[in-house]
Amino acid sequence: MALKLSMVVGGLAVLAALSPGSASAQAGAQANADPGVKHLRNIADGTQNKITAQMLASGVRTCTGRIDQVTNFLTRGTQSSALLFVPERDADNMMVSMSAEVQAEGVPRAYVSATFSPNTAMGCSGMYESVQYWNESCNIVAAKSFKGGTPAGPLGSEIAILNIGPSARVFLIRATSNSCVTIKKEVLR
Image (cartoon, rainbow, N blue to C red):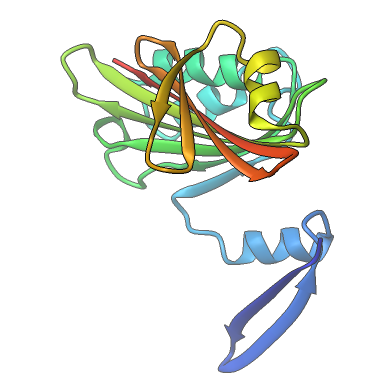
């Protein structure tokens, strides 16, 4: 899928068609990058957690244990790339976040987001969400991919909830009669 990108360069509006993996898209993203945003590619390569290492290098100390725990859970054994959101100053006392594209074998590609906040009673709290599109009905997805989840009723009129843990839920949104979007959310206190 190509992305149309519009930007102002030297007072002139520029419109370019970019495919997500193209060199132009990557160069454009890097050229317009916010200094507090860091792009990590192929984060699951190697033995070291690249997200934790980059957060530590950016000055995040209090939350590195929680960051390591959550990002290992979300990305270990996958093909993943991430975008880190780290404040430029006083990073250890500020909320930090990451967004990732995660491809695990046997399941649809996921968009994953995790946020970490220091200075809580336990040192660092966090939460993550994982969004996936499935080519199966929500009932089939719930039965196959979230075994043991208990129905917790609807969120409103269109989104069903599965309880999968004390602070973990899966939200199921019917896209069509044969497809479903799931959002798995867990809050870590």
